Image (cartoon, rainbow, N blue to C red; front, side):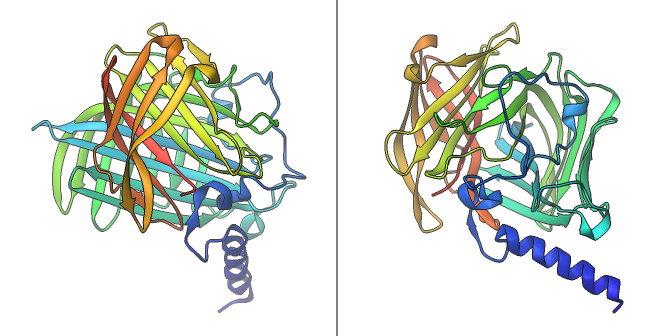
Length: 362
């Protein structure tokens, strides 16, 4: 083994240790130390002007960032499926970017497929600076190993479409084409998404208008699928306060064509922090007042030796919305190094539709 190889492996192992990759743990506080001190990293402040396609690419001055896709699909027989494709970037040290194995970026990819009777997931890790993982803004291309999210056919920077997305493991694979006829939306207040009343925040935008078509293969059996998809983009250096223990997040496609994003940030003491955005048929995203939102667990399920709230009653009084959500598969546990629950849901009530639920910190 060469000296360079020894340095490379040691550098990679050090990066994993800094992030806690040597043990399975909860995503919320432990991945990237989301509630820890962010000295030396860039700060999230209100009033930022977003630039596209530039902001589709990485922001290495910030500590944590993700490109997050979920899709609610059906096969030709009408069976519901869910798909997840996620790429995380984590800076283990602030400062100018170094070359090669000295680069301070670590990448993590998660992929999953979900049916009512199964939930399969896979993960990948890569060190930055060596080409194994990364994101390029223009032409847009995100990857980790062979998993790809790529702009095609003169992709529109404002629509983030069309895209091709694929991932595979020993148990499953998928390949989807995503189209969107409307522009992305800025979440929070013009893209500034507050996470607490003490100043924690992220920059956050979404493309909730994707239509999806392609194939999903489980245990060697491919099926054609169509449906809707949602991509979230967030970056920050300290998105949580030190006493926040995790979050419950919904992205919901209403049958009317409107979109709803909600999340509840749980705190060790006191009431959770609630916020969200409503995207109308005109494509305009409007922040929702916390006082108008209720997110109430109604059913808990034992998953991975813990109790999780897998069904919810959601109320948005400003929009006259009251719905009950149910999971496609209540056992949609991502038993990855940073474990969490992520899976498709459907809902009924004053409005009907489908979406995704993510829960961390349990």
